Image (tube, rainbow, N blue to C red; front, side, top):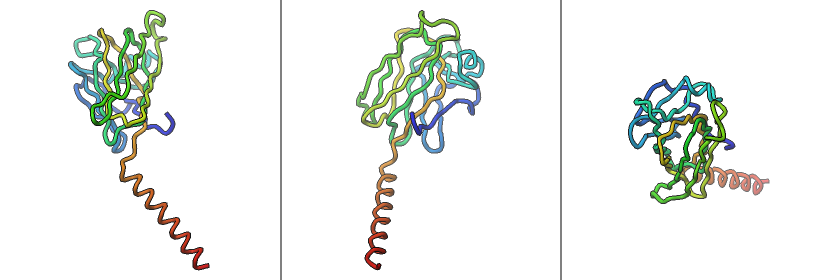
Length: 182
């Protein structure tokens, strides 16, 4: 994702949460499990090929919790992606716009039994023609997975485009004035 904002989870304290904001400047996202909790982990991430901290779907009771929602701030994003490891079941990801309209459905296939141990590494990414306001992650079973390097391309706020357009028009008009005076 060229030019994307990237959340590595490294600057966040390790521990369990039920709802958490992750911001890079004013742009960011919120992660909330549909039930139970999620975890910022500093132990298992290194073992599975990432470094530092990562999002771990392990709950406080030791079970897998792969059902969670990610909601973007602002006008949404045009694309997102993340590194994912240790997944033992299929995940279904659905993307939605601000009006709760389904934009796309994706299945991330299980990394087992083909990949074993610490060799289970992968990447998932999605892009849509309309801004993605949020996405859901669901699976048929309980699974533990590690997510790192969460990247996303924000959609500029409408006012930003208008201001840029007005600035360009001003430059054109200033250039024409100088030509007329010459």
